[in-house]
Structures are given as C-alpha cells and as structure tokens.
Length: 111
Length: 114
Image 1: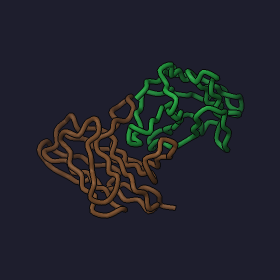
Image 2: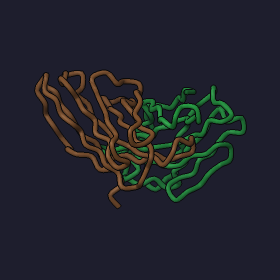
Image 3: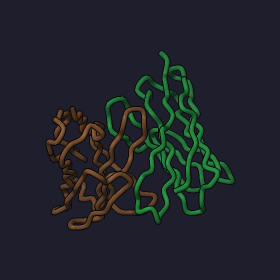
Image 4: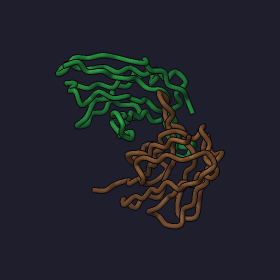
C-alpha cells in the first residue's frame, strides 16, 4: 500500500478552522483517500473519504490536490470533542479492504 | 444501534494463560477484522475474515488464532499469552472489500499480560 506522511501533532483553538495535511506522493490512480480519527480511549471512527474530487459531509471536508499527491482534512469549527488522533489512509482495491494505519496527527484543541 | 461489540473491556492475564476476546456485529457485514494497537502507535492488522468459514492472516498473526462460524461473531484466541501481547485490541467490520467501504470499530479490549 502507498505510504502517507502526516505531522505528528497540531494545535488549534476552539471554534477556529483546522487544516490537517497529508502527503501521499506515491498514490496510484485507484487509491481512495480515507480519514479516520481516534478519540481518547476509543476505537477509530470514520470521518470522510474521497477519490479525486473534494468531499463534504457533516463532520468535515476533504480537499484533494489536483495531482492527488496530497490532501487536507478540514474541520470548519473545531470543538473540544475534536481532540483526537487523525489518520490519513490510502485504500486500494487489491489490498483486500484492510486499513494500514500510520501514527497519525495528534490534534489538540485549546479552549 | 449496537454496531460492533467487544468483550471484555479490560483483562489481565498471567504469562502462559489463554483467553478469547469476543467480537460481535449486528450490521450483517461480511468482512471482519482484528487489529492491535501498542502505545503511541497506529493499528496493526492481526487477522481478517471475508465471510463465515473464511479467515486469513494480517501483518502480525503470530500467537493468535481466529474462527468465523457465523456472520456475526469473530472471536480472537490468545494461546500461551506473552508480555509482548500487552496491547489494546480492536475488532472492526465492513460490508465488503471495496476500497471506498467504511470500517466500523468496536470500543476495544485493553489486555495486560504480566
């Protein structure tokens, strides 16, 4: 599976937007970009995914670069509950649907 | 909305003991997975199943066994527990193998082997 690179940690203030970057320079044409997050002492939860176009859902937005070598997860107004580890994961059809987790980005939200 | 349910939540084992971590899902998902997460690290796949009666190894299968007799249940068996198996274990499920598919995770079982 192609590898992703994320910053180890980021900080934000409550009610401000947060942009979480992810680099995936070896992405292939059929790789989907998934984001999961893990709140303290909980299992990971799905946030959003996309292939080529930008995506929005009730939790977040996903901005995908035109060359698909990077993407950004956008939380429009961070809340204290958004403090979590965010994982950017590439999923390929041939990988049998497994998720390959890196170390993710620890997001701290300051009140 | 139960989703993926794991039991127990916590367990302490002595070296050499065995135990079974239970996982059940009520979403009629074909695919189920077991991951482990060591402190400060991402999750690693132990075993997965594509349907009842079919299982396969993931990245770190040594020391574990699984079975899948029903769609709903996917227990993980630890034989001869070792300190290296101290970890948090997560079970997950998804409807199929498509790369766009979402995985749903349980709350985890925190295991200490002393």
